[in-house]
Length: 567
Image 1 (cartoon, rainbow, N blue to C red):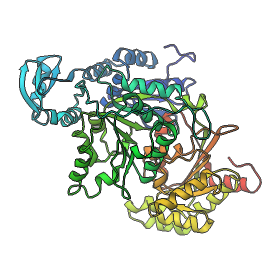
Image 2 (cartoon, one colour):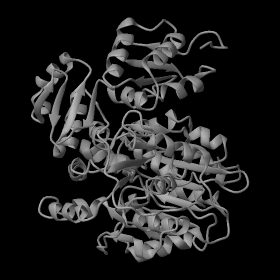
Image 3 (cartoon, rainbow, N blue to C red):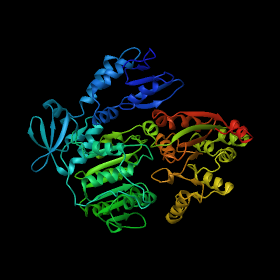
């Protein structure tokens, strides 16, 4: 790759970290390539640090990238060349993808390696070799069918991914067809990138039919799930994050496919219906984990599922991992806006659900008009003297909450809202006491975990129809809430340095808008506090996607409200 501006933009270190000069004229192009096989770690000053990991490389391999292409890019993009040790590590790690393959034998599964030495290496790993049965030859061992998921999980953890080519049971047949028109009379068809995602998921190389599709919030991940259901025409279990998400999946199924009410079951806290398409929450599966867990798993064994869809797969809880390990004969589709897991369980998602099959950049969809153009603004709010004193005296673990609940944020929030007349606004926060104070002070309706499902749906529907223009929402609105007309989000507090939460919250306003197709994302951060430190980490994923935060002092908003234009 030739760099029009002269000097290449990267510095590559032997520990597999990569530094990108953020101000380089072609930093955007370099970042787009890097995001295919590395993850953004931090952004100190004018430099962005990326890191190459085994999982970023294996996901790249599953998506079609190879070591030669990655090394050629890094060699051409590095100001001081590509260290031989880095090139060797990339080739070794990517070479492990495809080194072991799992296939179907006559009475059991077969784990085949490319060499006898590779099998010997696994035999020296007790966590892996405990699943070994008969040795069929020097490169092949039998694996019990029931151990399929656990073997893949342990091998991914050990650094040796398995390409699962053992195939899947077809499941009970169920015809699913898309409607040509919606109830509104509008024409409906898949977008080009949604078709690409389905084809990539179904690709037969590298164990297709199981894996993860990564798309921005608002890009129609649910529709991709419906399209995969239509492709395989089988009974489907859909797992998602909340009762609101269950309702949304059901609404999409009824609006966009040929399925009718009697084919769709809801399995949640309020209903326990198991039908050809069953939509369940992660919470109900993990509630009372242990005593009730087996009962739930037995219930799902009662139907012949051909496909399991994991919505927001980056949130998949540990008890569901255990269930997933026993449901490996069904195709598995993970849907997410980000593969980031704050708990470090990437190996379990990779081993049990599958590798990344498809990803499309947020900025590409923005350029094509499928996502709104978002302006991101970080507003730094000073403490009052009283709050500063409380912060200084707080224990270290309490400082983030004291900073997040800075009382001066309410005044700044009011200033922001004054500049949002006619917009649909979501005020999003982490702490219920803070949200209740905001709702009380402004008279804006609050939706939180305590809000009954019916009331929650009523308020969301009123927001969609424009009867309510502003909502205060807790974490319940982080995921899978369909509010297409929301054009402003104001984040007043968050969960420490969670990158995935930052991305999900901005995702609430990404649906394309009429007119200028523009949206605004404000995050109110207490300056000179732990909250400001965490904000840097929260923004990493969106920075990697090409978004930039304009930092403003609270005084600038106050001045804007007194006559100058709001940002």
